[in-house]
Image 1 (cartoon, rainbow, N blue to C red):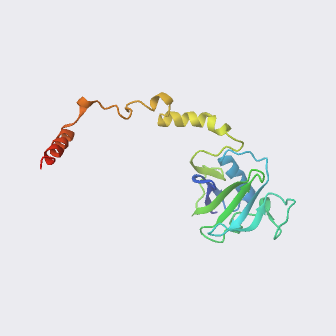
Image 2 (cartoon, helix red, strand yellow; image 1 turned 90 degrees about the vertical axis):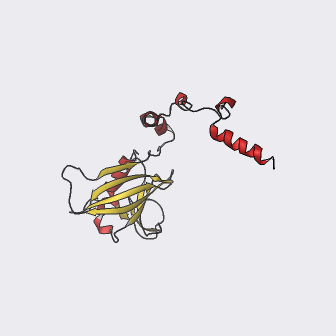
Image 3 (cartoon, rainbow, N blue to C red; image 1 turned 180 degrees about the vertical axis):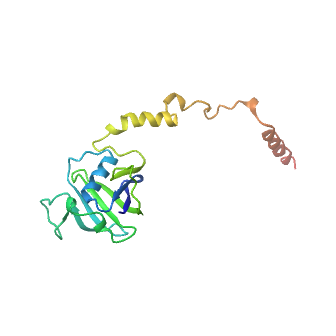
Length: 193
């Protein structure tokens, strides 16, 4: 069995991504659920994948279900399509669209293929998290424990911002360095000629 590792970028900010490992025989429905879970989104909305090329151009749709809209070609259904059957390229790409009203877009790219399954993991699984997940329904996600953890990690408390740093113009005249005095003397003597 092959384990496929996909990097899923949030379209708005490529520094925010999740790496999801999935077995090639699992379906796009499994990948869909793993992506939502890794970004802490619920699964209450419509979703679809598009096959893509290197320039992120949309191809054939692999949809959660057939929706009431026009299709260029009949969509494939996520639960019926295995991931491995759609891998045509070692850097295969897909575009994942979630919640057609909010239009969440994610770029999904195959970054690694492993021959060995890790028996300790239950696939699909998120194996790497980079950046704070965007908030699905507004600012709720920014005011939770993750922000507090960031404040603690980077010491972002308001009173900590000025600790150890003076304000501009705080230098007193008595604190001039020998180097500054030397350059001032050189300027004075240069003016004598």
